[in-house]
Amino acid sequence: MSWIKRVGFLTAFIIPALTVLGFYLGGWWNYTTVIFVFLIIPMSDILIGKDPENMDDADALVISEQFYYRFITYVWAIFQLIFLVWACAMIASTTLDVNEWIGFVLSFALVTGGIGITVGHELGHKKSALERFYSKLILMTVCYMHFYIEHNRGHHVNVATPKDPATSRKGEGFYRFWLRSVVGSYFSAWEIENARLKRKGLKLFSFKNDMIWFTVLPFLLALTLTILASIWQNRWVWEVPVFFFTQAILAFSLLEIVNYIEHYGIVRKEIAPGKYERVNPMHSWNSNHRLSNFFLFQLQRHSDHHANAIKRYQVLKHYDESPQLPSGYPAMILLASFPPLWFKYMNPKLKDWEEKVYHH
Image (cartoon, rainbow, N blue to C red; front, side):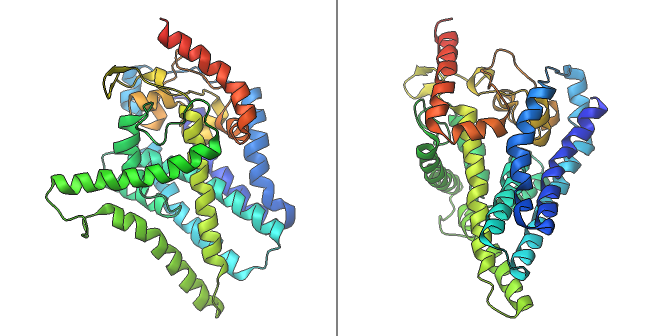
């Protein structure tokens, strides 16, 4: 793999660096990260263009085992917790006006949700106990620990079928999807976990029920941060829980809008009642824009990820035959935020996909 790609995946750390810089500069500088993500990256995607390069299978076997790529994700997991503690300390000890607070919380959520959950998602698919622990640690900071269960054992099984709450449907706007996916995914995770416990002959209300832990732990984290900040400031620091839960909601909303983009309108063929064709690279929207793929650890090569879920981010392939998004995720997020524009732009592309799949 070229040195450009080795260094490219470190670009993710630019986002928190801009957030910290914006905070210390104050005022409108708190929006630096927002401008960078939603203006500079999409423009750079157009200028830098796409990355058609796929490594051959022999190289992929070697590169997927290289510790360097795993190490970046481990560093991020520890960094995200430190970053959260720093932000809560700043919120507790600094008086921000409304404009600064909004800019800071938006920028912060782009770090914890835009990149953090992407790393948590990558780690959660892996077999090693350490990587799975780091995945849960990241998801705890954004109140979305149930994603660890639902995504791996629900979404990846049911993707592109009516059973999946995280597959957006044709003609469904993002805001309607958000409610269905957020609520549906949480309850789906409970069902999956309860079924696991039943199979093992364990009680549902026990310390072995991960969903009880996953629901409680983020609140315990918020309480701990609030108590520590309150002792430090010698007053009840109500700003910390407000900040913590606001950034968490924004962060997991970012995950959901990405889910919406990745799967909009795609449906697998039903080959028997309730039984669907195997997932293949035609069953997710793909984006091959080089720069945004660096920032997102190649999450945009989503078609290969769904076809081969355990594959590491650095060796994901691009498939020409997959349905292709017109831009990287940052620009697509802006488009999905305005459902009429999204439908106008994406429904014709979905129609092309339907004709390709169902008439060939």
